[in-house]
Length: 360
Image (cartoon, rainbow, N blue to C red; front, side, top):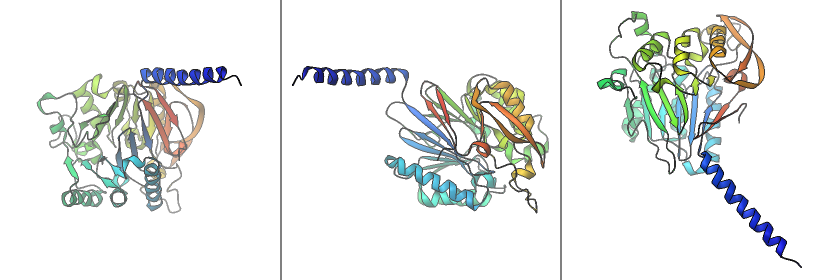
């Protein structure tokens, strides 16, 4: 039997593995994943890193959506057994129920190491946020509430970070997490009283960077908040990102051309419910159908600024006003839980992105 060809095959195989590993490593093979979980007319995003996980908002439109969120997280931890059912940081952007409805269920099912919010206790989700703050005090969860004034103290234009906000220290590449805005302790110049009373404008704004990959989470920030951040940070640096979780479920008051020109996203993800959720009868007041999310004007603005295209154009339902939906063709890299189900954006540390829709 001639063994020489086998030796050559083994050598070639081993050398190929080495070459692949070396080349892939040189290109930046460290990866993270952003899981935009379909919780209906609500927000919940899980960020997965090589050494940990972060949850930004824990909303659900109803009990059924809450169960779906918890099951998604259980499936995640069954795959990532190395993380020991531990969420390293939970961020609640603001105390509205569509952003914290499932917060208690998350705390009951998983271990939470760190927790941050904006410190307000006057919105529809206040009971959930209040219970979480109490749990933090009694169980040793590290907790911090954050204001815009705290973030920008001393003219800081880089965002706020510390051991609670940025708890992960991975072996090769760690995520950099900065809070860019929080509650406003005093009413900014140029705001109306209605702007200041609007809890959406007090949303935590969080920027996440993993190597060259960048994500921005703005809660339900509206136009007044957008302008404040543009005025302070300018149109470069901290606000400039590749992936944006669209403010306020794609509402007309959550997206503007000045804001889009400041953040220059390549991908946009809208967390919202099915267009006819709440259609009734009777019509549900707090629903996708009643709010009219997402708005046609928002999608049109996103289509103008986002450079890349979806693999295939998609005809969706978008609203011209409350209760009034029409067909809209999405061609650019705009995704929504209403159309795409669970959405996962895989990002390499060198800034390459892959979008997976209807992810289980």
